[in-house]
Structure formats: structure tokens, C-alpha cells
Image 1 (spheres, rainbow, N blue to C red):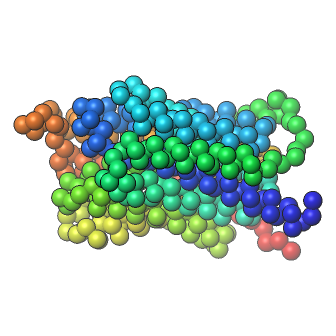
Image 2 (image 1 turned 90 degrees about the vertical axis):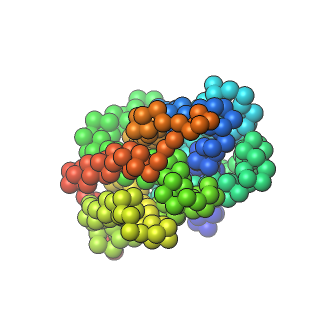
Image 3 (image 1 turned 90 degrees about the horizontal axis):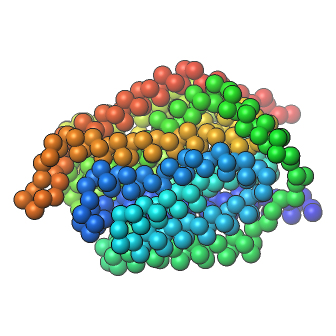
Length: 414
């Protein structure tokens, strides 16, 4: 294989992994604009809805580490192909659901299939590209993942308004089926020597026994809250309550958060390389998250557009979350890139498991049984703000964690 062929092979592999991450994100985020439809059709409260949506996160988190080890052993083609198919099946079950249990099963399969998406991007980046390009490649991966989040919000809301939530989800499942075939036909597997099982587990033990990895995971989990707790579920109804707008218009806030996060991953990677300090970069960006979100959520003086600007700034600063993966990658040998990404992503995505149902439970607690004359639960602006205090608290803990994170500095290459 020539050098040119190798570059094409590397780019093809990373591109298909990026596309996989984007599709899995669409499937995970879609319910953020289905809240009213699901609550009305199935007669459920925000607590039950939070549990349904979070069902995608439990298998996603649990499977991160096993998927990291499996990906390091079997390669990305096998993992990505199977995951595409499983994600499509999950969307199909969700679309045809007639009960809460079926909705949960569909979400569970979507979460299970999405588990290796981000770590496969990390695996290909570590296998085929220079170490100095890792942060930028992962930033691009997060950018495309956030594009999936954007497509899963406002554009999906428009499709739901026109065709209904079931047909929209059927279309998503069909799209996943097409991508499954494309991956099987065109993605290639890298020829590597087989690793012994104990060698793979050595990579897992190496990172799991390192306290720095756990601190990075906590930091990543807290700075992912703008997406997992807000953009993917609760920011849309919050904006509806605050400004009395439609679901479609409120969904712009979710898009803004995803766009900011996407750009923030690339901008923070560029800045970290520019100042040659990952630690200083994440400290600056984490402070930015806190300031921006305090203004966006609790300042009554700002209008809708100003609030969107602050959400965009907060989302951009939260994009520094991707730098945690670069720092964690520095903790293990390159051949364990998938295991490293899987371990850290498990800790990061745990925020979704906790905060999505937690905020739903808090909303039900603060409404204290308030219902409309038709019996529907009432959630006002003060309730959302009270619940979101827990997100702000998590961000404050993240800024404390940044001071315990080690730095990564790359020497200039000759």
C-alpha cells in the first residue's frame, strides 16, 4: 500500500466513524422535541419521561469500557457495522411502541448501539494519525456529533409537526439501515497483529488505576451537562416557559447549544496547541461556561436573542470537554486508544444517566402536585430555574476539578 493509499484509507475510516457518531447522536437526541407528543399520547409525567429518555444512557455508559476493549481487538469496521444495524432496530421499536416499556426498550437499544461511536473515532485517530492531530480530530468528531444533535432537534421538530413523531422515527430507522450497508461495503479494517486478552486488559487496568483518569472523567461529566441535561431534553420546555414561544422556535436554543459545543471542541483544541497548555485552556473555558449560563438562565433583563447568544457562548466553552480525551489518551500507550476513550466516555456520559431523570424528578418536586384543570402537570419558570441550580453546582465542581488535572505539552517537532 502506497503512502497516498494509506492516507485515503485513514481518511475513509475516520469519515465513516464521524458519520456513525453523527447518526447515533440524531437517534439519541430526537426525543428532545417529542416531549409533548409522548406525554400526551402515553399520559406520562416529566419524571417518567426523564426515565424513558435516560434509558439510552445506561447501556451507553455500561458498555463504554467493554466496547473500548472490543474495538481494540476486533477493529472499527465490525463494531461500527453492527452498531449501525442495532441503532436502526432500536429506532424501529421506538417508532412502533404502544407502551412505555416498548419506548424504554427502543431507547435502550439505541443507547447500546451508540456506545462505541465516539471511541471508534478515537481509535481510528490514534491508529492512523500523528499524536499532535488527535485533539483536532476528536474536536471534529464532536463537531459532527453536535451536527447530529442539531439535526435531531429543530429540523426533526419540523418533520414531526408535518408527518408525526412515529413516521419521522421510521425514516430515521430506514436511514440507519442504508448507512449499515454503506459501512459494510466501503469501510476497511486495518490489518494488525492480534493482541492477547491480557494485553488488552492491561490497557484498561492502566487507565482505571490512575486517579488522574477519574478526575478527567468527573470534569468531562460536569462540562457535558449543557448537552446531556439541557440541549438534549430540558432547555426547550424552559425556553417555552420563559418566552411563551412554540416548540419549533424554542428548539433553536438546543441547536445553539450544539453549534457552540461543536465549534468549542475545535476552538479549544486550537487554543490548547497555540498556548501549548491543555490545563490552562480548560480552566479558562470552564469559567466561561459558568458565567454564560448564570446570565442565560437567571438574568431576566435579557431577551430571547440575547439569551441565545449566552447559550451559544456557554456551549462553545463547554466544547473544551473534548480536551479531556486528549489528556486521557496521554495516560496510556497508543494501542489502547479505544480503551482509553471508552473508559473516559463512560464517566462523561454518566451525567446523562443522573441528571436527565434527576431534573425531571426535581421539576415534579417543585411543582408540588400542581396540575391544569385537565389534569396535566404544570411547570413554570421558577421551577426550571430551581432545578437548573443543580447543573450550575456541577459546573462549579468542574472548575474545582480542573486544578487537579495534569497538563499536556507537546514538544516542537524538528
